[in-house]
Every structure is written in structure tokens, then in C-alpha cells.
Amino acid sequence: MSEWEWVPAGTAVTQRKDIVQLANDVEYRTMGVRWYGKGAYDRGVGTTKTIKAKRLYRASAGDFVFNRIDTHKGAFDVVPDRLDGALATNEFPLYRTNPARLMARFLLLYFQQETVLRTIENSRSGSEGRARWKEADFEGWKIPLPPIGEQRRILAVVDAVDRKVSSAEVEARQLDRVLAKIQAEIPDAPERYVGDLLFSIDSGKSVRALGDTPVIGKPRILKLSAIRPSSFDASEGKYIEDITPFSGSHVVQEGDLLITRSNTPDRVGYVAMARDVPRDTYMPDLMWRLRPDPEKVRVDYLEHVFASSRLRARVTATASGTSQSMRKINKAGFSKVLVPVPSLEDQKEYADQCAAVAASVKAIRTEIDRLRAVRSGLVNALLSREVQVDGALAEFVKEKGA
Image 1 (cartoon, one colour):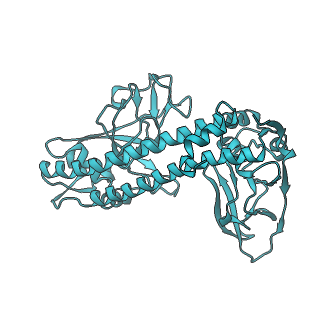
Image 2 (image 1 turned 90 degrees about the horizontal axis):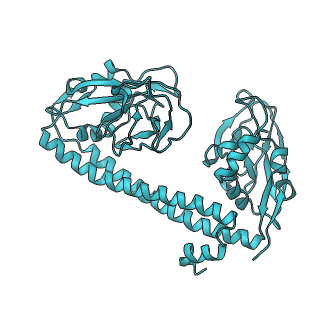
Image 3 (image 1 turned 90 degrees about the vertical axis):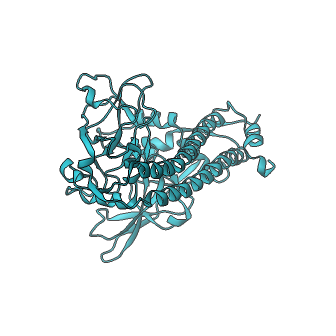
């Protein structure tokens, strides 16, 4: 078994400071690092009129970079080729790894672990809301350092899982396009105001949650992310302890038709039917429950027709608000949205066609979630040496003959 070292990161990396002094009337391409492993991104072009800093730092493809403010949220990456030469503020320190000792992508793998991110969160310094994990913190942080050959083999295993995830994501996007096409084929029919098709629109309740994730068997309040067009995910919720502020009307039941009444401009007005709902699941104040009259319209028909581009445009057109980050729809405006209302038989045929494809979409996205969980567990097991890399290579990289 090869020997691993645990060393301060600073012994295997060198900070790069390619300083660029900003000049007036010159445009500079800038970059940042997003949360939750979404990585480095192009922040667009800026000038001295829009950039507060007097100097920036030039990134190079292959640099290891992190966001000093949001490190605990997984804001790490290796600068990709497409951002070579982009400029970053001092909030995004840039490092070059020693190629004889450490691969930048292996270092990134280590900092993608949830256990590491939680430890970082507990160690950050600074006032609440502006705490930073600074260069000295990073450079003093002890990291595992296997031999370079073993780092390569570990990355080969993870890359094999990533290829499976990428392939599944391509399939999911293709199915999304098929579903969108079917949803757009709404039967020709007279249109009616949606308010005339509903018994009522029920409001949710605002309460303080105790965490960012739900606890199995405990009450939860849904996040806005629980609702996507024709897709409901009860795991997108927050744990709550005190349910006394809620009434029965706030409880989410199986088959409820839910809509986000406030969200970003492209997501406000998402509609989905609640499925596989755990007990004690509650609506937040930024959601409504729609109660359709079953003699006029089917719940599953509304779920899919509101996901169509035609109805999405009508709903979002009613949204108001001065902020471009959050828009809101109100009951009066939403109730005046016109909806084609074919016969109940035609509604069923349309909904059944949509549901068949939606089920395939759900299945592939469930598989993507499974693969991501496998990846996370595999990374932890490989870096803790609970799983030996040669065995993992044999299992996950068969197609490469490794």
C-alpha cells in the first residue's frame, strides 16, 4: 500500500499574483467562483466605472481558486481554459500546484467533500455575514497527499462516474425538450379565466426554519425549489420544530396543485402536483394551493398546461415588483389568466401523454441523483482509504481496461 502524507496545503501550492492595474476607458473580462460546486464563471466585462478595485489579478488555466467569503459553500474550482486570462479580485486567490506533488483537480476533489466544508465553516474568521477563509487559512490547512500516480488513478475513477452523470444529464435534457413539445400541443378549445375554474386559492405561512434540509419523520416547510414545472420534490424543504402557527389549510396533501407565487422572473409561477408527500409537510408563504373544480378541469391537465410556454408567458406577464431578482404574482392578476378548457376527456388524453414523458424525466433525474450520491460517497471512501483505488478502477473504469 502506497504511503500518504498529510501536509499543509501551502507546502504543495504557490500563490500567483499577476497584478493588473486598471486604467480608465479599458474593458476587462472578470471572473468569480459560484457556490455549491458550480465553479468558476465569467462575470462579464467591466471598467473602472463598474469595478471598485484599483487592481485585479490575472487567472491562468489550471490555477486552483476559491472564494474567500463562500468557501464553506463549496466555492472552489480549477480555472478552466475558457477563463484563461480573466481577471479576479483579491477575494478569489489564485494558486499553482507543484506538479511533482499535487494535481489541482485532486485538490479540488478534496475540497468538494461535505465534511471538509463543514469544518471550514466552523473555522472561518470575521464578523457574521462577512467572515472570510483567507489565504493563511488555506495554506495552513492539512490535506492528504498520495503519490502523483495514485492521485491520477483516483481522478480516473471519479471521471468515470462523472461521464455517467454527464451522459444521463444529456438524456434528461433531451427528454425535457420532448416533454416541452408535448405540453405545447394544447388541445384547441374555448378559453376561460383560471379563477372561474377554481374553488379557491389557498395561501401558505411564513415561519422560521431550523435548518436548510428536512429531517426524516419531522415537520418540514417546503422551499421554492420543491416546485419545478410538472415536477415536485418534497426533499426540497427545511426542518421546522414549532407547527403551532400552522392551520390545516397549510398542510400539503397528496395531489395538491401548488404554485410559486414569488420567485426569480424566469421561475415565478411554477406549477406542480404534490406527489409522495411526507406527513407534516407545510406550504411557505411564497406558495399557493390551487383548488380546481373537478367538474370543469382536471388537476393533472392544469399541471401540464401551466408548464407550456404559452401559459408560462401568460402567468409571468402578471408578475410585478421592482426587483429583477424576485417577482410576485397576485391572486387577482393570476385569476384573470386565460386557459384553454377542452372536454374532460380531451384533458385526460393530453395529461396522460404528458405524464408518460414526465415519468421518464423523473426516472432519469432520479438516476442522476443516485449517481451523484455514489460519486460523493466514493470520493469520501477513496480519500479516507476505506476503498482502495485499484478495486474502484476495476469496478468503475472497465470500459478503459484499467
